[in-house]
Image (tube, rainbow over all chains, first blue to last red):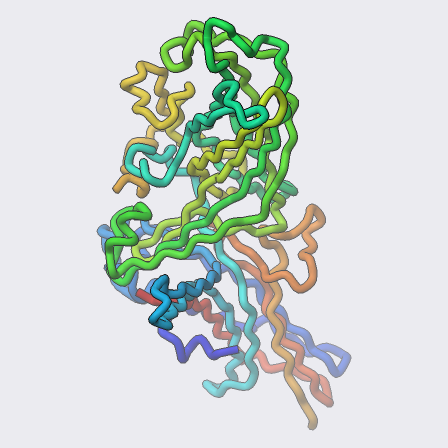
Length: 369
Length: 70
């Protein structure tokens, strides 16, 4: 393992533990233990300007809200699309932490031990992402033609909104979220109303987690959009898709849209709302969503719906989702909006907007460009 | 007098511990930033005849390495 003292570090905390409790024992092995607790400088006062030499600099108020980057490692190799060039770009991003213990006697080093550890940023989730700022990245609703024997027999649409975060709590085996989904079908000719309340479909829902890691040579003020990352030469981006998870749903018992949804859903539609439970085991140690000026990680949920029954089709949706770690019960300072607004402004939709916790509006979320 | 010293680092309770506080073997200890990093440093003095060095000190360092650094 490479000696971390030889590599530029963004964090270097030192503590000295006296072994004054040592005592002679009757055996030839005399064991002395000392407990340690290193408080991480997550508090603003321990950060230095522009995130350098963490723990070794002067206090400053300009670092308010900055956090340690979470441990992670991701690699990517990008090839050129031009067949006449052999340009290959290799991207590596890694954050690692190590604890080293040095035993000194009379200022002379006599023993050393080291262990690698993981550190994850934690705290309350950020408010939901403003989808309109990331309009080219997320698809909250998609409509597709239903086909039977090559003929179009109707339309199918599915829609989702940003779910609550995957919240990993100590002592829990997994993080589970509820993803509300709305499915709608409509016949080609509304007057014939091909579909009716008893039309039966089977839906296969395939979901994956997409991680996007952004590395920037210059400090970022907020999480960039994909478009910003592609246009800015100082920002590199690595995206990865996680494992596929499959769920099967039986869709029957269609209903006409309620009056509250009538403005968003055609009265010709037949509709079903379902809530899916998506789970990720804690042991996977999924890197949390985090933002630092030079490195950040965010996630999205990619959901593909394959419909079969009175016609076949498929749609693909993608919404943001956060990954959060906490030691205690979930925080309550999340800005929440209710309703199925598919990314439109909650205020415009005149839907209830509730701010829970006084600190929720103290700072703009880092997701706001 | 013959002697040898074994210095060991252990992290007893991290986020990935199970209900009994046991960590799965081989797994890198995980700490949440607000909790800090905690553990035990153990020094085994194997000397003949028995003895100890009460003036010894352990210097503990926590490094963070980032690539790219900036």
